[in-house]
Length: 164
Image (cartoon, rainbow, N blue to C red; front, side, top):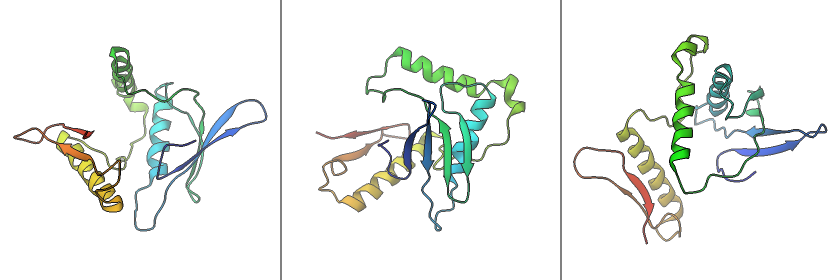
């Protein structure tokens, strides 16, 4: 499976006709974030809450940084966000935050690059853009034209766009 840069994700077709996902998580001795634990624990909490629109965690190997998950067949999201997609996102967030079930959940750690405000998000995006530009230079066709657009005044949620 393609798309990510930090982790390797594989679809594993089983002899019984089912498929699972094996994910090998990026690990670096200088970066102490435990990406496997953050994702696996989150998906475990979602499973406790009966959230069925995300993969179910099946097994993990902390020594080798591997996670095994149920496979959900689908297609990548298009760039068009309509009212139905917004409702799905809202329903997902509501189901994760169901107050009547929160006592059933283990305490979750903070995800890698978690943002708790609009300004946190803008800082994270700016750091990522600067890292990309440093690695590829301003001549790269994808990063050389990217800029972070902020509204004037206090930091507010902004947008990242490719300039023409």
